[in-house]
Amino acid sequence: MELIKRKPRKIYKVVCVSWGDAFIETDDFTLEEAIKTQPIYRKTVGFLICKNQYGYVLATDLYEKESDGMSAKMFIPKGMITEVKTLTY
Image (cartoon, rainbow, N blue to C red; front, side, top):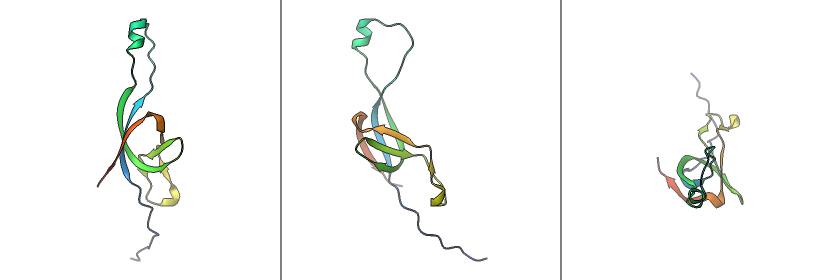
């Protein structure tokens, strides 16, 4: 069996992004409830593909062959991010 040598794939950091998410509710509400409304805070883990002036782009999957790309792109706007931690694996 002949081994196929591949060009090494770019190494992407795995990060945990803490951020405040927007949401919608369809129930009626009072002014008092509206005043108390806050973002829903969540943590998202993924491969950090890039960051730009607008925010961070994560992916959940990297295909074995780099030419096949990646999947499940998630964009988190910079202004919604409260913390980014690099994870080790």
